Length: 329
Image 1 (cartoon, rainbow, N blue to C red):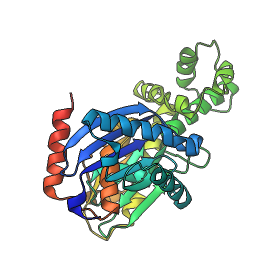
Image 2 (image 1 turned 90 degrees about the vertical axis):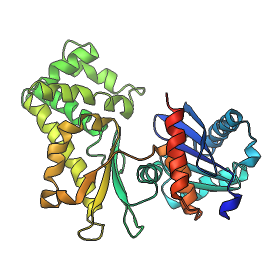
Image 3 (image 1 turned 90 degrees about the horizontal axis):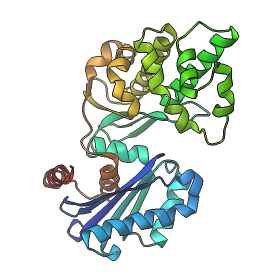
Image 4 (image 1 turned 180 degrees about the vertical axis):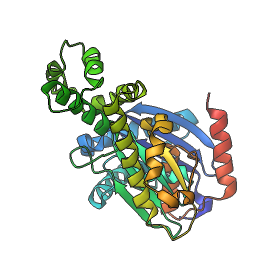
């Protein structure tokens, strides 16, 4: 695929709670940005195609072009990181002629590519789940954590809230230290005693996303001086630090490494970072926290360019940043 034939690029990022798409001109100009309901690949499998195709049509309609004009499409989604899934989704999108060339990858790799515009660095994501992803200066892709709520996700909102719920129940049954979390959860769930939350917790509709939404209550208890909540928050910061530290060890010695912190849990980064940095010891000086250069949906488009050996020239990235800035409210 030659650069001069690259007229339009689509990027789509499908996470656990929402899907977002962008349409770029070949020179980097952002033409359209659209949101859509989440299309979870793990649940939908082949049915995900109709959701992706609908979003692609909306992007093209907004820019007044035909879907036949799309040269390149990058689709990054939760659950598409393994080879068999990548191949399945790629073939699915190619058969639907979403674009002349299609690249399917994990949402983590799209976020990583967007954060550093295809360059080296580490992202640590702390939302419902938690993981680190990195690209070394040599181009090696590194994945740490992100094994899901059954096998890990230490440092995530889900894991923090689950541990806090457990601590509150252990306070009630006499196995644990007294904690304000017990009263906080009783008030939140509208029950007179903490053990009565079980009916709500085990309702099929109360999924891990709903559990993760309880994380701010744990931070609130920590702010009020509750020792149990403070310990759990500190353990969360340490777990996230361990993700980043493991990724850092895969970089060449003594190199300076940019780090981007993603996800809702890092809205409380001032609370999490003291324990986070303890993991690094004297190697902390190698890490520089930066703000992500581009959001994951743009990373999906950039990743497609990178995989198909399209150069992300300085003028292209400047056009993208400028047009993005003017498009935002």
